[in-house]
Length: 292
Length: 239
Image 1: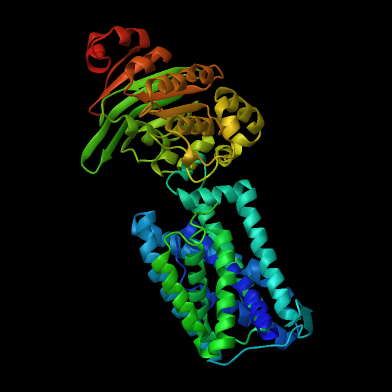
Image 2 (image 1 turned 135 degrees about the vertical axis):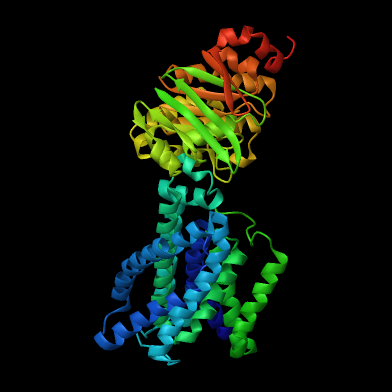
């Protein structure tokens, strides 16, 4: 009984972080029309950054979070305008860019992970932060995981409120559903798509720092994170924030149960299985609705 | 004053609009009549910078918007006070009425007068008041046109451009919708309307023009156009 509960709580903690990751990816895809296959590699970059700061200078990952967020925002605003906007100009249209941006992001993934591999190799990163046991629902959870879970939900919740409750968030959703009609409402699509792309990256970097707090990782794992975020986006329905939360939790719990009761080596296989199932059975995600 | 001067548009080698000039004064309703493919939509889209004109200028109260239009910066044209309700469009169908109206006031110039304009739009279309939380995509065609016009008004336009607003509407609804235009014009907003429904649109407009194969062939007062045998034959049927 207690091991069942352990698996559930662990699964929910991972699931909360996956949901956050998916929210960033779905924003980038839905609004900027860029399917960002380099997502997991930038996530690892943020995780490595937090780990090194902690190991060398004893900087708390919460401080790293505050540093990495504005940094990745600025960097990716530049990446959007210097790389993707140029690509859009060459593609001739917003829609043609969607296809070429996948290849560009795929290439970017190799550049980022390749650069990190050259410096760090396949070495495993981990650090002990807040490694104190907390009892919750009769199960023992390390405080770092709990903190990561809570922060993931807080960030995800804030991003959601921003999208649903503010005029700018509404404009961003309008771009997602009708990029051609948005300029008639006075919305500068390129400007807001760029800012949303950068904002998606802030979420990605925050997810990286949160993951570094409780999980051992190495550079080649970036692809797995991209894949997991993609699975959650597709299961939850592209552009659907609440769907992403549900799908993230489902993915986390599935992984945790497979690891505990089947084999830890099969967790990624379980992710693939869920992915195939989602693609085959659902057209619009578990909630069957677009971003609302 | 909205001044369209010698506007020419090419789609590839095809000339869709040939040197069209037109003026609309504040508070005036002007209708451009024409058959399908005459260049009516192109005229409005080029004025908004949604398609790039090959020649010509657009001036808004003396301010030359041509460079914005040639760079297709439609959102900045809206920011200057021109707004278009496109054919069958002009709403975000996945969003609610309320969200659509909020986005109408997205341009900075519209923010200060948002409350006042919202009250005005809901007074024109009281039906929207009960539907604020409904998704626009689930509403009837006539209601969607109301949302589109209301959204356009929220952007505090100096000139409102309408592309066949009555298309696909039942006659009663079409009449209801066009009856609203004089009230909008009474607020000092100039209205440029393109329509196939000549009878109805000439009854609300002060002036009209006929567009044929991309050429502006005839411009006169609405009364004159109504009595013109050519217009009667082409657009008003036999009655």
